[in-house]
Length: 469
Image (cartoon, rainbow, N blue to C red):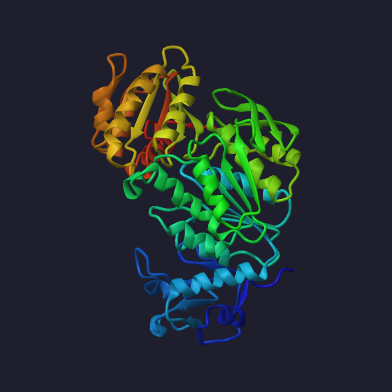
């Protein structure tokens, strides 16, 4: 039987806090949300969009073992009182890191970091006790929360790190101190805040500053900013550099890749060993992601054949290329759910995936596209550029959501019919009105555009549909 994740004494020593209302509690988990809190969790009353202190009574009612608070009067049960709750969570995370012998992998990048993190986590789970960031817990509270949740007996852990501004990843990697630091790709995401692609590359490269001794840095070999990333690696304490991609010098080299509508397969050269790879998920980017996963997992001491076996069993995730069928009168239509996020690189990949799907009968290719956010002054042109890609992909209908999509819709050639929707709900209504059997529909956009709500509505029967698969 495993012991508690935290005892009162351990949490007090880690945070430097003061125990009130009880000093013998034991916590089996750590939570910041009373909606998902489980009995026995240590509740951390963070002040973010709402003040967590207001929810301490609810946490106690739900069975929290104790709460970390900065206001002693926030509850009546066991409390660990600290000057700053976020700082206490960070200290708890550092203590969890220091007491564990786990090999830690840090993942960042403009594109693919969550998908790559999930795949690495799957490989790690197949190889022993593992720990990983849930969902996209990759920010100033998500990373320390993930660390604080790591059991002492963890063998390998993977931590996702995100950013909006320079300096944010530096703070996160200092907490994690990864043994392996991976950048998936540099793309025009958060360009609005950072100002240039070079600045984006530099901000992502902050992950190398936290590398533990004898650490491994992993970068995309085919990226035009690879030399810049290499320079940042050389400035860090990294002992080894792995590159992945199609370049001849890559440690994990993509030798071939055959992409189909819903899957891909190819061959990699992994440090001189030929490995066949199969991915049951769509998109040309899957080869790139698989190579990144392979590099990280091999660096973590896992055999390349085992990595390939796990990748072969993984399917596309909701919001990241997963597809499902909806029944219509006289047939069915396929929905490709790539609604989690978008930037010019991932949008191009999704459109290419749509092009590989052949509609049935009189069906058409349809794209419901939300605007791409935080891509800077070039945003209007970046949206207009999609018009050519959509036409080349044989897309017949486009529904745009968000102000920036007006630039795309107005640039569409005569072969593509485009219309603007006033909201995600309006986009759903317009799509439902035009759907017919045989259609293939891509739904993609930045999270802030709300197009994920279109997917949710379809799954909930917006077209009186029966979901299949």
